[in-house]
Image (tube, rainbow, N blue to C red; front, side, top):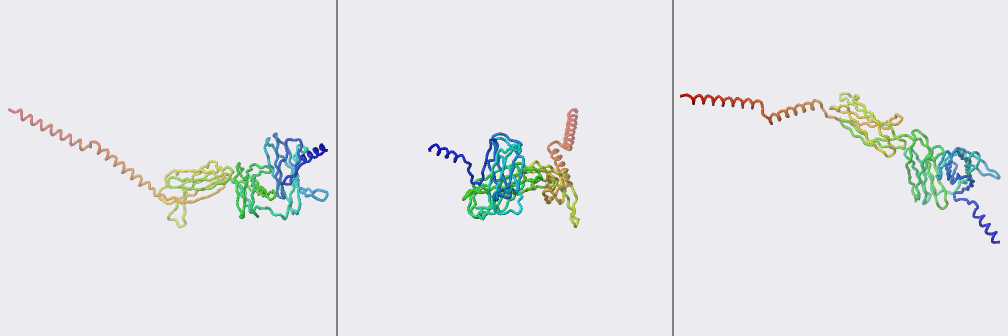
Length: 389
């Protein structure tokens, strides 16, 4: 009898248990398997793991509506997992397109396969349109080229984790997580920056997955699509009659490889329409910038701007040649080339006089020579008189 009870205990311990996330998993002998999954009627995510490098595996996902004695497959997606390394979790994401959904229970069935052989299978059950309200909900979600921001509102005080995902196709290419965040009574915004480079003009999905722990564990998920763009702004300008400079601040994870165009125009004071003529235009390349980087670009005019009023236009040009930002300001100059020339001439005369004052002048030499000659003549006459008998 004791032996029978021992065997029954072993069978109960070895039976698969349903997790708090309402998922069930069945593993084969393959080292690659499905370890986590989630779904609602808008999207799903599945996390894979293998103890060895994998490639050319297929992930099949099906959205199923249980029925009386049968299951109705509403949607199916199948795609390659690509290569992924050993001992690393890899997450795949997909979007459903369910029109006119009905309330009730649904199931996500995920199968990891290799050449039609099922390596791992897992299911996730959820309910759509339930009367039970979540502790919090997403008010707004804004992903862009810098990062992602989400506004959450609590129905009651909550403690939760927020997982931010950057998705390219089915692949999660960047992921970061904030744990043990709390909300009490008012909405609050939460943000994260992308920690990877983006490609200009490419579409990505920004996704947040909020894990609520009590009273029952659950998830609140939202996904939005965006197009990555190179972006930067002019934050500071300096200018005078000799040149100009502008400080550029990066605002995107798309590498900014644009340029700055400085154009200076002299305003016509006699024109009622305020017309201006172009004096000089200089285009300078901006060093590559990412989000939160800054660089100062300086240019010098070929010639110093002469007296007058000038309009300075600075244009920030993006990777595609588009003008991202334009700034205009005024440069006033009181520089006059004639005054500078006169100043130089006067300075030269002063230097010449100073040099002459420090040495022996020409008139002094002549006066000294004449004096010596008179003394010589005087002594000569005096000597002649003294020799007479």
